[in-house]
Length: 114
Length: 111
Image 1 (cartoon, chains in turn orange, purple):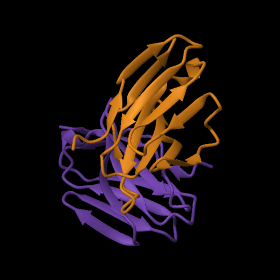
Image 2: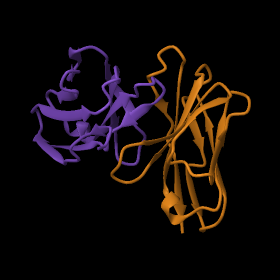
Image 3: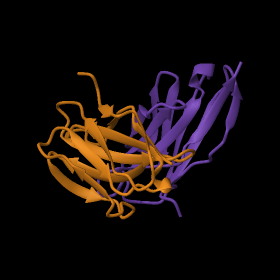
Image 4: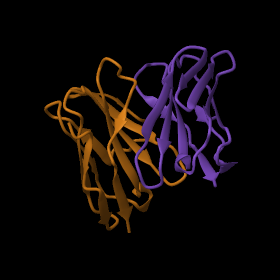
């Protein structure tokens, strides 16, 4: 068990481009979360999955953001038509259904939009 | 009003002292609370969880919860320079679906 893996670790893109991040959770964890964190702030909830079902999305998540977890294993977070305000650390976390409160975070994917 | 509030700090304490970190929350439906530590450039890691009123101790760390006052705290005894980090307080939302984080308190322990 190598923990929660995220890829890529860093992404620099130009405004208007699309980007996709991948998260591989701990294998026995059913729940998967995406958070966004900007400098000086705590992680901000974006969305979460239980198995392949996306159960909640933040109102802050615009329609340029989409997340999938097609087979209940890894997840992808896509941002279309990136804006400079999207620059942030995108954190993935997973948890088991029992003890679902305890999140284990990945190392994060840092996005810089020029 | 933010759902989970913390002083941003920095909180500066000398090595060996007790560091006291505080957090308030607004959702009375929250029942579970967590403290995460985040080193600069790294992801958050869980230090402690607390679910019942009172104190919970784990090594040098003590978490305190007062649901009536909607207040959570973390005490770090015998602070070490390696404790220098940002400490994030998190509350499980009343719907039991997600953690809501505060902005974090930056702790600096100086030799």
